[in-house]
View 1 (spheres, rainbow, N blue to C red):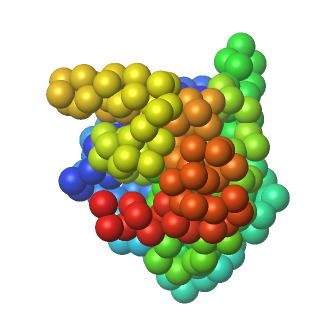
View 2: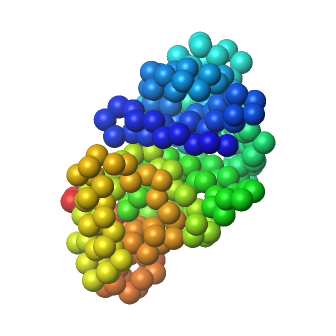
Length: 257
Ligand code: ZN
Ligand code: FE
């Protein structure tokens, strides 16, 4: 399975999964039609599935148009997004499995950004030691999604599920927010040398218009303040020793950043 990162809208990423053997493809969170159709044309592949993480317009924007192009494709989304994702046919819950191109992905229910948000995780297979995590707007490189429909406790639980995955996991998040996320992270975890080094690398990458996605989960665990609610430095910033309170305080600071 090949994964292609497509630019969409202002700072969204669409991920296109390609199975060269069957010449089929799937997309994660198609924000826009054109980048998907362009890539399918280049590959000569046929779209068979849409994997949506949540119902927001910048993640489902091209669902309807893609269904018109490929009437047989299957649209997957979270059980709780029933009625909110255009064309949805499969309603997924925590622990469900989906498959594409001979690989199976595990579904994680990760509410917080929205009440129905899900993530898809393909465990490592074959020679590649890393798994692939498609986490929409739940976990970002250096940050996490805003709490539009969920509570800090839910988000800590959701991020905790993702944090439990192996360090080598590649994190395919749906937005290029890394630079501003890490600039905020420095204000709450500024004595973290790994974070400072990462920020410098990301500044250089963005200056050269390079993408910072996928990130690696191991580095997220070391530098993302929204995965570090149990670290003394973050708890000191939040004036709390309690994980959910620490997370909530840091999240509220980011909302005002
Ligand atoms: Zn969203
Ligand atoms: Fe989004």
